[in-house]
Image (cartoon, rainbow, N blue to C red; front, side):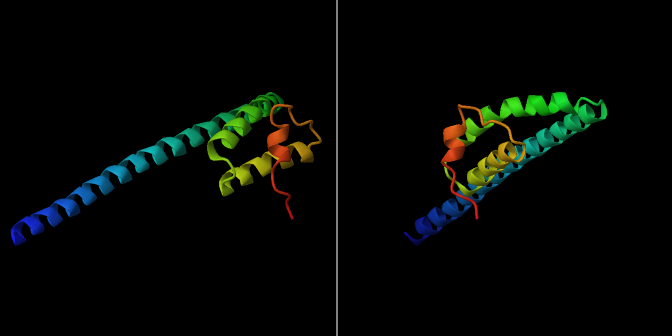
Length: 115
């Protein structure tokens, strides 16, 4: 009986170690993909600025903001990171005196007031 308990505990420990290794390796791979994708985005942004196409780049990025706002609101709700990102978008529109697109206005208006 004692031997079965010991084997069971060893199995639990080994299973936990394997599961931890699998989770950490998949997390590391996702971090690698995200980091490298961000790097490529920065390279593209720098290239557009160097080619004096900053106005086109700004227009392109602004056109994508509503989609990103909608996804962040739907997927992440009122998490701290989501509220911070959405507040940044709201501040962008206010800072540049731009009209907030109709499809995201309710989302940005529902954000908590900033001190």
